[in-house]
Image (tube, protein in one colour):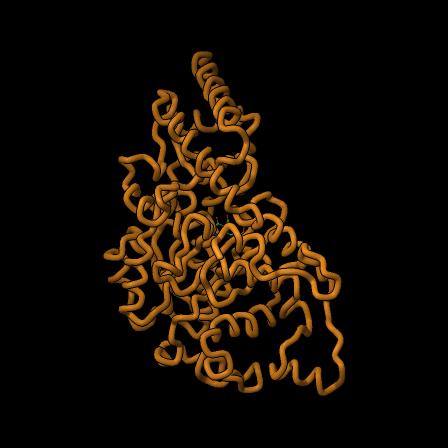
Length: 430
Ligand code: PLP
């Protein structure tokens, strides 16, 4: 089936108990066993079924199947947020120590997770000078457990050459993890270009309405953990915490997801609530239509902003002279993201005035909502980074990030216009 159909039907036809066609919200913590032996068989993973919602829940399972199908993966683990998904993905691969190699253009908290939080777990983050494969290559060695990138960087809007990064990763015997939050599988399916693991913040464009947090890890099921057992012994050695289970033996191609679920979700519990899984499923039903409108509105706003003398610069991969235009053609079929960054003429002070004068566009830190959203990354999402790290992530002091929503494009533009006029009035009054 095509993405438009999967987003509505994927992973669920109807509820066998009631014939309901909307995914039921299984608001339950636990599931009754037929007998002591049945309970033991479930815990031994000898029979299929649900035990406790910290491990799996039927509503969340529908979401997992749908996201996996949309991303061409063999399965998924849905968790409480995008950050939890990233943390579990990195830890599942590198919790016996090791390095993760990444470009500098990452969402601020993902950078902090790698550079600071996971350092305490023996994970070393190595950031390259750019997202180009030749800049990442020298950082890879025997300690490396993965290459990680955002398919479309937040907020820089840079596009990674996923096929080139996958080739590089595989040449060194490591998987490529791609955060596909900004693109969504509607614009780009990283697994089709060689990625091994795809991570999502479902909170953003996938859910699409800013009402539920969630994250997902999708596995392509292609990485051969046994063949790389020296680098990844955790998949082919007995797990003491799970009565000696060997993930590669028991789960085969699903070993990575099984370990993420059995070790990290089970013992640290960043569980997605069934109600949130339902809300995210509702959002995903319309993701293809919404992405189409996001792209159209993003294009209209970018082209309106650029020639305006009150705007200093606009970064948008849809411009023919953008350094990412060719990659936008190759990976997004020309559908550049509606996540834009720009500078207001007059620098930081002018940017702040513009920001404060917005009326329709919301001042907040989120992206991918039906509403148009605006933030100042240097003082919010990327605040924990040094000024140098910010610049390498594409965040200048005056950068304004705009997530163009689904309103009428003219209404968004009129709001931007009146906010820029307010900057001019303030400048003249000086
Ligand atoms: N990845 C990207 C690209 C993001 O933009 C975000 C949040 O903005 C995250 C991950 C984290 O997602 P969440 O807020 O759901 O934890």
